[in-house]
Image (cartoon, rainbow, N blue to C red; front, side):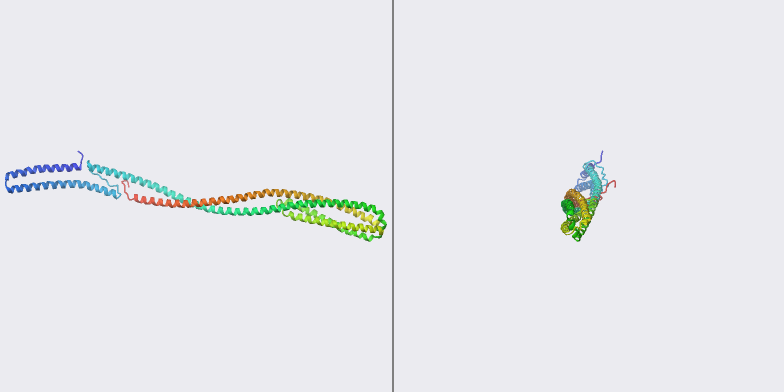
Length: 425
């Protein structure tokens, strides 16, 4: 039969009753034999004493049995309350106390398993928290680096935007200058055409003058001989012609330099304006010299008239020198006309080139304007990115703090779990 504390206590009570049943008849027999008042007193006292003795013995045995079991249960509860799950609660009892002990052992095993699971999971959580903490710390540092880079990029984009604005302003000035050069080239074309026209007219006038002089030569030969000294005015004509030659030479040189600079400078043709001004100045100088020539010619005509009226002695001189000078002057005018054609072609080419340059620069200026707008838009986008990175940096800082709190809570939980002692530890 299986052991039971209650059954043991019940058996003790039965045994006590049996003992009382045996002792009572003995005392009763003695009482019946004596049949005296003193014996009756002794019998009563003996029965009471015997009952007290049997009850005390039964109580002592029952107390020892029950209190021993309760003491073991108390040790189990104290061990569990102190976190020590290594204590084994073994009581051989198959009654309610045994069932209570089995439930206690089951509860202890469940708690041990639960706390062990919590401990294992807390270690896993602690590792995850530690890993996340390290990852978040690195991420926070990277975000701070990105924040710094974004600030630098934002500052650089603001500088680029400012430079683009300055470049746009400069391009506007260049556009105005190139347009002015193109307009000046157009004006130079008109001036060169006017000079060419005047050179053609001068050639025609000189040819007519030669024919007139040759026609009048025979008629004025006698008078020219008288006023030979007045023919010195022709020297001034030669001087003026030399001036025209020098101007033509300088004009040719400037035209050549303009052509060289046009080929070499490319889009940087700002210096052509100066050349155009020089060409215009030389053209005006040529005009003034032409006017002087015309004045001198008038004086020569007047002198020739005087020579015709005063002396035929100049006939030979006019025939041999003046007529020749007329032809030389005609040749010079031909050269001047050819040079005017050449200058006109150069200025026309320069005008066309400047127009093409203006059109090309107009396209470049449009691109610069688009770049300036794109740089401004990029600067705004970078500023928005910088603000987003700052917000992300703040959120990552908050997340790092929360992770630190979680790590601290995990440490506290590990510390609390470490107070429990298990069988496998």
